[in-house]
Length: 272
Image (cartoon, rainbow, N blue to C red; front, side):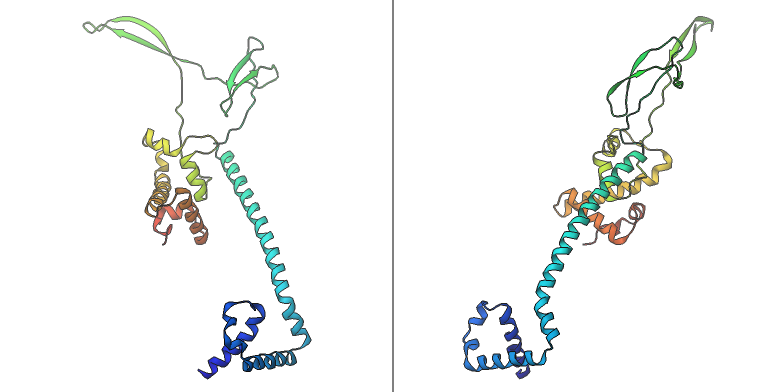
């Protein structure tokens, strides 16, 4: 206890220099003549034992620490802005690489009967005019398929009539998860708002099942495990899904793992 009291008194002398107005130093102990003498002797001892370089360093440390904090804070703000811009650029690049981003295309068509102007729709949904040009490449338009149909008399099997019915050829669009999304943020955005104006995965799940190719069944289930985990975590902890997404992305970065790995081992996503 004696050593503890000595340590306390020694430390109090140094602390008083930094916090002279602290309420604890208003105690009568620190105004006692014995303490005042002890304080004076200790300060003289510190000065006599310290080299000029040490004294200069001690005086410069607060200013140096403040300068370092200022520079680090400024650098941190710049890095955060750069990281945000990089994420936005990566997101746009993913939209373009996956074909989901609206890319305006100008097409010229050469018709055999002369120059004509046709109105088409660009990938961003806006009407556009396409002017034909004799030097332009040919645009192959699939013709209508004609199917000969025959109606038979049910009693004698004789052909009653023959007609040609034009049937327009069409191909139903195939939708799938983007393989260019590698972050929780991107995955949640693809699910809730779509990529580049594309269809929402959330709406596709409601409208038709299964809407994805059979070869993407496992890929789909991995992605949906992550989506369900985000929703459940947000509900259990009474937070927004955006907050749950941020927590999940920080966890993924800490693990340095991929969405596929998390989808296979969903228990790794959230650890309270």
